[in-house]
Image (tube, rainbow, N blue to C red):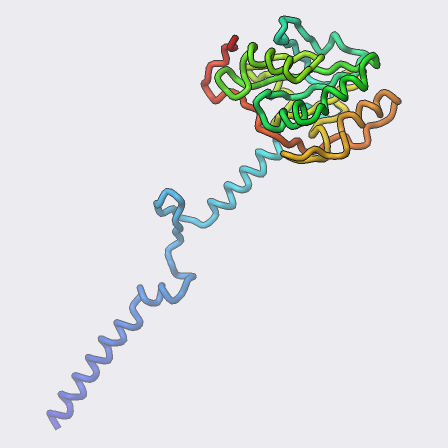
Length: 254
């Protein structure tokens, strides 16, 4: 009898030990996701508590996109005074009573070459509106040292492209940021009252392929007829504007 009781006791102790192995708190947590620690890995390899960082970041990004600054359709276009590569000053208010077309420009951007070298999109448009109270100005907001910057380069390329309208330099990016220019080319059409009537792409094409509908030309033609611009805004395509990096000197290059 004593031997039987001793054997039963050994079995009981073994059963408890096994229960501790299979039903330990750690094992239970591993099997139940709801009880696992609330941590996740970021790209930096560190553990961060909480699973909402990604969602918060997305909300912040969305908010930034919604708060994007720049000229707005139907409102007065931002005033500016810029000097072109030939030394002439251009002040927006001096052109009141005329339609003004601004083209954000970078002579080394493939999308600019697409419309100035492979095709003559802007030159043809300039010739179409010559003598019709339409002013065209190319604006280069590339900062000193960035792609497409510099007076001499822009003089050379404007001549090579056969441009008959001015290329103005905005190397500190003030005018570009005021208008919200993001790409080259990025186009803005200002009506005779100085209000923004169109902003966006030159046409319905894409990087590397010209479109068959010129939005800028259409907007100008409608304004000349006294009509409302039917497509006032599109998404610009091309290279990013080469603005100065934070803290970068914007002293113009010659």
